[in-house]
Length: 222
Picture 1 (cartoon, helix red, strand yellow):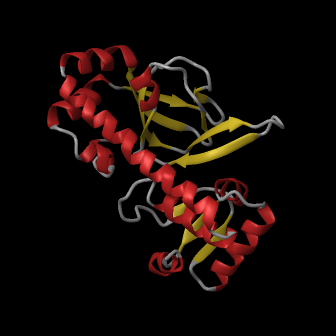
Picture 2: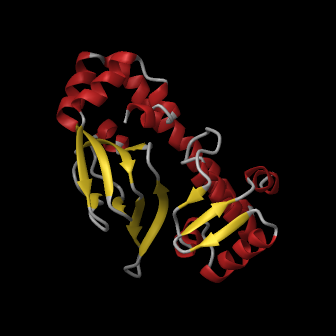
Picture 3: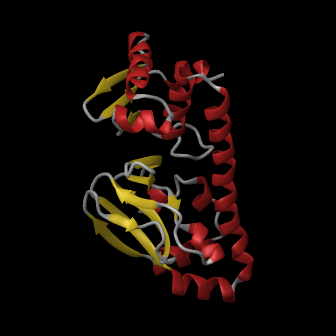
């Protein structure tokens, strides 16, 4: 588990004392497909890191349909916003597959941070990293055509929403989810993916997309 967590730039940068606290205080839990880690409006219950599986961050739109905003892969930490402001959860965190997580309960985490306030800056860094990505993603949605939005989403998924280099060649999502992330229709998303497949940049499979040529995909995003 420690080796997996070290692949996340945020966790890898933590002082040894804080990293040890998170690992020793965390509780491993397993949730089934379509179970929720937390729901919109619920009280803060701590910090999480995904060890296995896929989680979508979503909300229910005005038509009563799920609007997926992000898909989290293993190694990513989440749940820090409510830890900071004490306000209820703003989104749902739903398991797309069976998931194994490490859960650091809010009570012990808040006590540790009260005793060691210098480590709040690392929680702020976690929020700051995601805020930068949100602004970048918003700019993409506002300024780029659909095909380029699809490409950018593939890159973000490959980097697991961090600034690190690509961490996987297998993106375990389907076209419906990708179209929501890229804010485009499923038909338009499918056309973009077929273009990339024809260039031998990606390979389309059942319930996942395999990236064959990351450098080529990156060149298309510039």
